[in-house]
Image 1: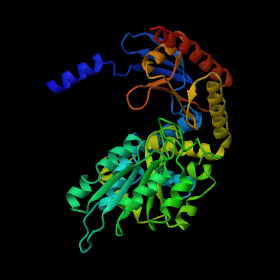
Image 2 (image 1 turned 90 degrees about the vertical axis):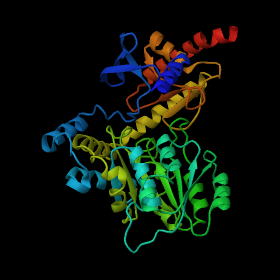
Image 3 (image 1 turned 60 degrees about the vertical axis):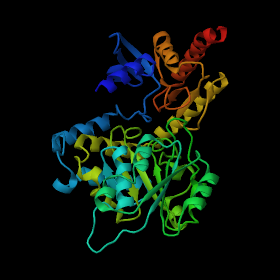
Image 4 (image 1 turned 135 degrees about the vertical axis):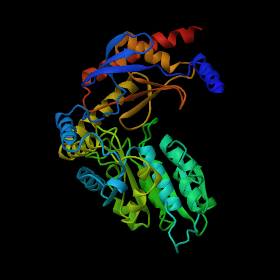
Length: 426
């Protein structure tokens, strides 16, 4: 442990450690926080929550979670393979299938476990079956800016448990340039072999840049590879893009059937921590046989199934989204207004979704910018300083008012004048 101690000491000395805050109470976008290092309490206006539609505090969602506890208890205490699913699981899977337009859905505790389950199930087929020989290698192509849960799953795809215990063929992983379908086509032409099983993996809305994957062009490229699989992580897309928040297919006015008819197999991952006021994830497909395979993957049978209150909250949230499209319209209006106000004020606000990164000059410390915003203006936004170019990551949601957005932009301008000036003078 001495190495760990020395590393963490240097980590703190280098200023890489995040500032820590403890939340005591939330009401709308006002959060009562405690600064962990000083114990100072402060009520702040947040622009860093992923509760994009404001459903975390919805009375209907909270009531659904409470009722589930009364009916089922707080946990299922085992995996569905050993002790069965609860009816809420089936209802949630059916609701997601309708929401995403794909009939077969499997639930997971979170997106990390879902993507790892897919790597195991698709690449290694999970369980050795007598008389069946798995002989085809898998080629995975991944966008260089994919989320960490994707990166973790694909970079280890050749050494995960299915490979170890099933002795399945090799998995080869290649990255392509961010949202660059020409580079994707080049990589496929260069690396794909005649018998390969091809899996292309992408976020649909990228969590740090706020931009959208070029779905129509990706389908066009993959249509030259009959049976290729396109895995779409909708974590930041569900509830936020598309006319009614159904995600990337609706955003481009397409359906999953469009991909299927062109020989491309779409897999859609829905996560519940952003738009669905809960936690957990699901993978949906039109291929019925994928679901039982995912159900026996190590990240399904090695842990408990989604707890009842969590399941109920996600289920009611998705029903709220389907029944109240005005929530999505309000989010999109707020997003457009906030991005335009920031750009008018001279900030480099990139992306095209409710994830609004504001790039900072390299000499500006994002953590310092965020601290000034908190201390001087009572506004909480997220500094990003080690996983991407220095930036402030701002998220709009459906509860924000124009007055709150104007308050944010004015505070950003004042903070820029305070933080940038000493650097320029130096």
